[in-house]
Structure formats: structure tokens, C-alpha cells
Image (cartoon, rainbow over all chains, first blue to last red; front, top):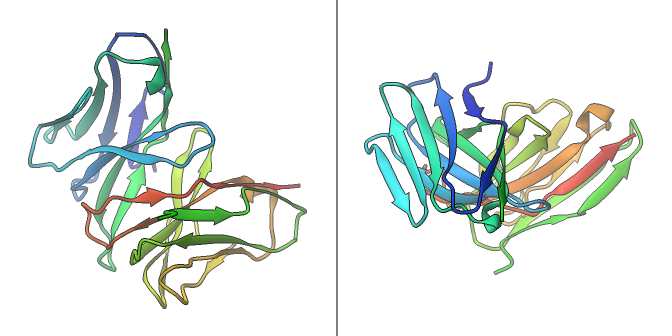
Length: 115
Length: 114
């Protein structure tokens, strides 16, 4: 059972355009939603994260929109640049039985930004 | 700070062989974890540790063992490699269990089992 569903699987955007990646979850126990960026041959790196008590968080050109009632959240990349070409993962974290916060990852979106 | 380091970067094993993937961090992080990444599957948690001497299973623990004798090191052991374990393995660490602590990933180990 896929707990975090991410779409689209791949995305091609022109330079200057808006990239939008969507994620949906079922388990209402999730209470922390980070996004990771991964370049080829590298490990993922935290890009931006949001808690469910806010509906939007912006950091530079990157914005997370969060809809708690719909159990959906999305990443918007404004003015997309070729350097943004990477794989993006959404994740959702919840308290595990042992007390740790364990993230569950979406399957990733490969973004290509054409110059 | 070197951050999270992993060795080796690449490894080819034959079915049935055993090996240990090394992971170390120099940030004095309590929480460490191992993930595997397969095409179209995202990152799946294998094992994690909340501190020296404490480990627990993640989503896909079968075929893997871990131990945490020091804060810095968290090796992952493949007991008898199988082709299904062909994957890219990432080690990660964060300061503590709290959700807002940033998780740092290593550069990965690409493992092929023939």
C-alpha cells in the first residue's frame, strides 16, 4: 500500500515556467511534510518542509501548498531554471511506535527544465 | 565537517556473498538510518537507530542487519546477497528524533548483485 502518492512521474518545463508536483496521503497521523531534491549521483537534500498548521510556505522560488482537508500538498517552483533539473521527492512523517519520526517517501518526480 | 560518508561508492557481489556497507557521520547526530532507492520506488527505509546500542526495523529489513556500537558509525550488513538487493543504498543522519531536525543523506553506494 502506497502511503504517499506522488505525481507526475516526470515533468518537462521551459525555462521561466512554473513546475508543479503533487502529493497525496491517506494517514491523518502524518504531521510533517518535507520535500527533497536529488541531483544525479548524489544523495537527496532537504529543500523545504511544512507543518499541517499552515497552508503555505515559501522559500525563494520554492513554495509548498498544503490542503489538510484534501490530504494533499504540492511543490511549486516559480521561474524554473535549468539548474532545477533534478528528481524531487515528497515525504510525510509521523510518530512511530518507538517515538521516532519516520518519513515515508513518494516515488519521485524527474524534472527537466529546458533552456 | 565531512557530513555523512559512505563506502564503497560502487560494489559488485555474487549471489550468496556477504558484505558490509559503511556509514559514518561527524555531526554527533543521534538518529541514523539506511534507505534503499530503486527506480520508480522512491526511498524505502531498511533500518534505523535512535542512538548507540539501539536499532529498529524499517519498511524493508529482510536480508539486512545493522548495529550501532558508536554514535558515529552505522554499518549495514548483507548476510547473503540476492539479485533483489541490487539497488542504491543511502545512509542518513539527523540530530535527534524530533520531526523538524533536518535529515542529511550520504552520497550513496551503488550495489549490483549478479
